[in-house]
Every structure is written in C-alpha cells, then in structure tokens.
Amino acid sequence: MSPVLESTARALLRRIAVEQAESRLPSLTAAIVRDGRLAWFGSRGRVEGAPPTETTQYRIGSITKSMVAAVVMRLRDEGRVDLLDPIGKHVPGTPVDEVTIAQLLSHTAGLTAEPPGQWWERTPGMPVEELIGLLGPETSRHRPGRRFHYSNLGFALLGELVARQRGVSWAQAVQEEVLEPLGMLGTTTRPRAPHATGYAVHPWADVLLPEPEHDAVAMAPAGQFWSTTNDLVRWAAFVAGDTGGVLDPATVAEMREPAIVDDGDAWTGGFGLGLQLARAGGRRLAGHSGSMPGFLSTVWADPSDRVGVLFMANTTSGMSRTLLTELLAILDEHEPRLPAEWKPVAADPGLLELTGPWYWGPSAYALRLLPDRGLSLTPIGAAGRASRFVAQADGTWLGLDGYYAGERLSLVRGADGSVSHLDLNTFIFTRTPYDPAAGVPGGVDEGGWRS
Image (tube, rainbow, N blue to C red):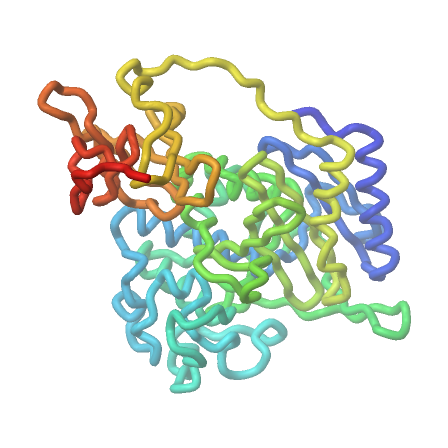
C-alpha cells in the first residue's frame, strides 16, 4: 500500500496540529496504518528540542494489557489453561479465586479497579506476594459476570498467571513470545532514548510539571510498557489479523468478539478478551487505549479493511476523545477504499446444485456458496437468522456467526442419494415450503395448502 495522498496528509496533519495546539500537548505523534504498513505519520511539539519521530518512545499504559492477553491466549491455545479456569487454579491464595480467566480478560470479574495502598501509577511498585497479601473482601466489587468493571488489578493477576506458567517474568514472556516475533524491538518496560518525558500541563497556565516514572512491579502487566509509532503500527496490524504466527488469526478474531458492552444499550464501546472495542463511523474497531501519569495513547484497528490508527502524547489529560475516529473519517473522505475486484472462482458441482431458495416452514432463505466450500444462509426479503458456515472434514458445516454460531448444518439424503433437506440443529430446510416428503417435524397436514 502506497502512502496517503499529499492532500490527505495535509488534512491529517492539520487535525493533529489543532489537537496539539488547543489541547496544549507537549508533543504528539499519530499514524495511519493500511494493509499492515505505515501509510502516514505526523507529529507536533518537541521532545528534547526536536520533533518526535517514528522511533521516539512514549509510555503506552494499558495497551500493555492487550499484549499480556496475547500470551494468555497462547497458553489457552497450547492447552495449558482454559478460559473457564478459575484464577485460583493457577494463582491460588487470593480472595477472588473463583473468578475465571475469561472474566479477568474481559473486565467482567467484578474486581476492584485499583489495588490497595497508594495510587499505584505514581508510587513505587511492590512484589506480587505482597500485593496478594493485601487483598481482602473489598477486592470484589460486583458479582462475577454481572457487569463491565475495568480492573487494573485483574491484569496484575493475569500477569502472574503468565509468569507461573512460563517460569519467567510476565515481561520476558511477552518479549519473547509476542514482541520479538512481531519485530517490535522498540517496546520495553523502561524508557530508552529517544523518549518523551511525561508531563502534567497546568490547567490555568502554560507550564509543565514532570510526572514520576517507576517500575510498577506486581502491577506492571496493567501498564508498564513504553513503545514507538513503528511498533504500534505492527501491533495495529496484529489486532487486524496479521498475526505473524504469534497467534492463529481465529484466536485474535475471538479476542475481538464482544464479551461485554460498557455503555448499555448504546453499544458504542465494549470489551473482548484483552481488547477494547468501539463502533464509530460505520466501523467496528478493536485495540486499546493507554493512560499513565504524563502519557496518553490509543491504537485502533478495523480488520474489515485492514486499516489502523494510533496516537501517543506526553500529557496526563486533556485530549479530545474523538481524535482517532476523526483521523479515520478524514482518510475515508479523501481516499475511500475501493472494493476488491470481483472474480469468478471454481465451485464444487455437488455444492452448486444446493444453491438457491430453501424454506424453513414458510420462510424463504437463500443458500450461497462461499470460498473454500463455505456456505451462507440468509433470509429472502424479510427479517430472519443469517449465518455463514465453514466446511468440516466429516461432511457437515459449522456455523460461524449469528444465531447458528457453533451449530451444525447437515445434508440429509433420500434413498436415491439426492439431497432431501438440510438439517440445521433440528431445524429442517426444504426445497418447497413444508415439503411433506422431507420429514418435517410434526408432519404436514394431509389436506395441504388451502384457501
């Protein structure tokens, strides 16, 4: 993918220039990602007297959580843990031993947002044994599974899970299993030059206050990493599905599935397994935001067209919440993506004859072929349950989405070998409405259709 057009670059640069000036940011970097590559980079402000570059480090805060989650999912895929395992099976001795790994990943475990003691983001960290020893009944704030409640403490426990399973620190595990394979060599637990200094900007004067930086130790899995634009470009590509062998793309797709929404019926924001989710401008975005004293950051990816967007700034607060979605809107306005060219593909003759209308009772559905022997079943002209199906080795199809996700679709043949009907988890689809020869459950009235 080539860089964005000059006119697009100018519009993107103006948007971050307005952000840097009006929000009074010491410095800001932003980038657009297309097809896994850097398509545009912009920066404003100064770091040590010079404009920040693609290799300037910023602290990325809770984006760290999504990288820890990737190792947890690797452990799941290896069979070392199950997402339904209670955390106490692997990290015993806490007052919340019963909450599951999946609940911790999706912030539905009901844990308190912050650990006991002083504000952990601005004070030196403590060993995990000491942290666990301080946890009491107040660690649980809500019934597990009841609601979304963001918990930094929950990711401290997941980091310890990773450390105990791998026999090394959580950071070493992430470094060796995620960062190095993806080429993210500019992501570290402590800053290295060139890096931005974290500042608080005075609310009523144009002066700065340096924010503290330290090793959060037990709480580090919740927000310790520093990173660069170049590395977050690669991370955006990973979230969009270009996993580089670190995880199966299907596992990352599972991480992007909504486990909970955090704004009720509006459903503009939610959480998957270690990934934040958002719906904006017709897009479904996945990624994570980050906030630490002196730093703000966010990375979003849209897997539907492999576009990503990110920013990093060295300020404690004050930025627009819509910066990244506005950058995506600028991209869409100036360079709307062209659909992929249609081209014919070979079809199995045995499946081709299955295409066309089928009926669930009186409701009409269309069966279409998808690549790799996949099927799509969609209602015709009315509301109904649509799903896609992937072919299985035993001759059945497995539902991928919608009401039939995880359910089996089978072909039922008559005595002559021809397909009599489709059986979709007890629902019978026939070539004509209520075909009496197809074994419709409950039978078909002998009088047939009548006026």
